[in-house]
Image (cartoon, rainbow, N blue to C red; front, side, top):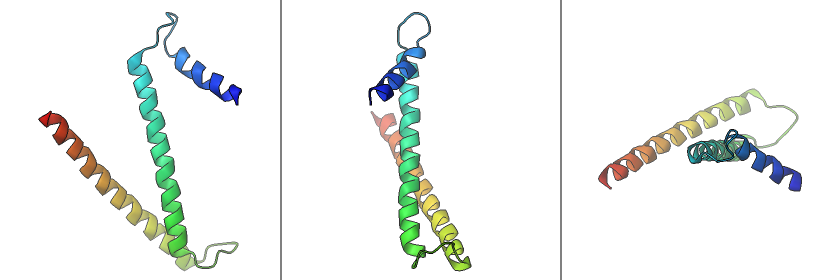
Length: 100
């Protein structure tokens, strides 16, 4: 477990370059990237769960044609709705920032 922590720490430390100071802007960028990755993983996990439950009645060794079509449609719809919500959320954030 301690191996992971030191790896995480050195990741952040290496960004500062010789001076030993950490660049707050760089750290924020790294945090944003990590949050984006976590969000993408969660999105994928939820989409997989929902579409699996919706489309696959009897799990077997392979997907039949109708299951494949169902999963493709389900994932498309899920991504569309995710993007719609995302856009609405971002434009609302921008509006609220502008009004501050």
